[in-house]
Length: 294
Image (tube, rainbow, N blue to C red; front, side, top):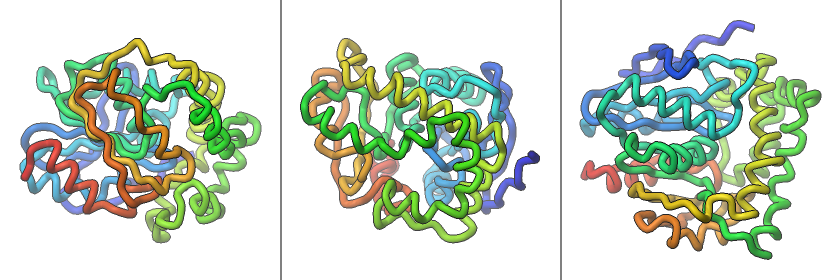
């Protein structure tokens, strides 16, 4: 299946970068120190449409890649683990910003990828703004196990035999899906909905999403609940902005990171999971604050 046309956004240029064995699509605008922005599921670079222009106007070079299997980036048959996503982005940063670390923004799976990138390749990232994603330092506890049921919606997405059919029809079901996952603020207009969901009519992209969620259920979530990263330290200056109306990731799980992330701050705000769509001005404000753009 051919990819749909890349949507137009004033001032944004598009190109493809071959790095780390992956052909990655990036949307790019502005000049100056680089800011790399990583989307989550089920989105692509278009989720940053309201932030690209203002950040570019603030004197930054804004780089918004599509993750492996999303948007207009290649969709190979494997590699749909956040650890691989992090290696993909490390190779991309080395290609587009050689010798210069970047400021990083990540939402959802893009945020989790950002945490792993900062842990594995801290020299590539100056500062990190994480949005509505749990950090990897969640403590094993009765509370964390009690909230694990919230990931129920991932089970059908994780079934390779079922996910392509489910995701192929996502455009017609997205409102119902977002009503629970995203909460009451999760509303996209018809154009945005098509840009985010039409990609999954492609079998390879739907399979990539299935493999990601299968990995999440059988490895990532159990690993975090067992304390996989509690012997690691995040050295990157980080701000985690978390909408406490998120129905999947409970805000009580944000606490407790201090022993592992001495340079991280967390802020709970009134927003749901898709915080970039529902509160772009707040996200822009926090990005400007963290990256010294005031």
